[in-house]
Image (cartoon, rainbow over all chains, first blue to last red; front, side, top):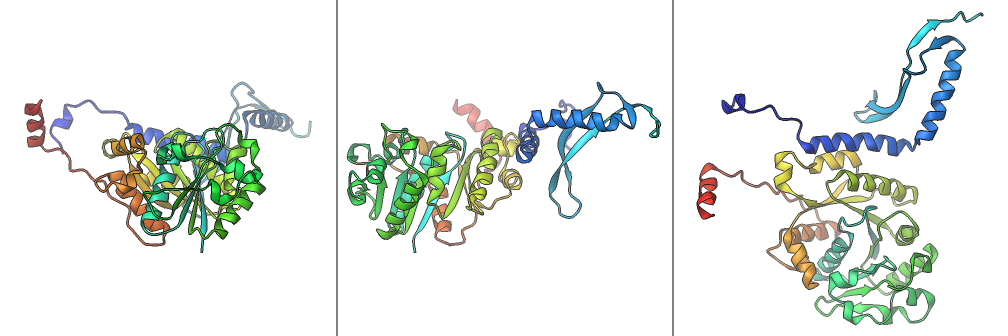
Length: 94
Length: 265
């Protein structure tokens, strides 16, 4: 281990890898070709459907497109990520 | 056997025209008959990069509209045997030509017996891009290791494949080795991994390109130029030879070097 590194300030990630990460995320959106308008429509539809079954926190709802490792090959695939906080379960039969 | 290669990028200013000029000259130096076609109608630049701006009489639009014969518009480069330039029109716009007309033009150039027809595509994804790729057999995408340029390259690769130009290859231009080694620039693997295309070549950022362009002489003809060497390698790959990608490893500066530098100031 470098003796001097102990004294040096721990530096942030190099800008090259920051660029790579930003680029990857931008391309996920570009390649899916999903506009924010479409995402907004999707969001309202999801709220509508889920509200039939349970009461959800519409303010805390978070929907975004990111990427994940695909199961079959080593590449990454886009995923629709939705975090939907539930306030209370409604009875389905009501 | 003749081949039409379109040099494209999406983003402007990444080096399409410089790449077109150098690949054209490099192929001509190796004895090929080459036509360089400037498809950037309204913003013609390939003529000045080649240093042939004073010899233009007719242009691409004149040929397409039948104002002259193809042979009359082709400017012969006297420095390189077998190299010809078809300049773009400067006073017209992109709509002056249609994709069908460009296809026909490429066919006529093939009939003229050119081995390689290199098309310098305009920036953007509009009419000019559609025209430039219409007659192409294969595409070369130029990018720099920046987020904006790689993003546009990704879009262009998608559009090329949607138009039947599959498996475009990539030229990574203006790579700064010092920045890559410091971790402050994306490296070759980063870019090829993200774009998922084969790499045709890597051109280092080199001031000899600026000097060569100032004089209107392509750097590929300058032996001591690093970028020139990179272009010569790309030319050989275009001709089907297997040339390894240049390594640009710089020896890290030792303590004595630093000391010497200090005293030189």
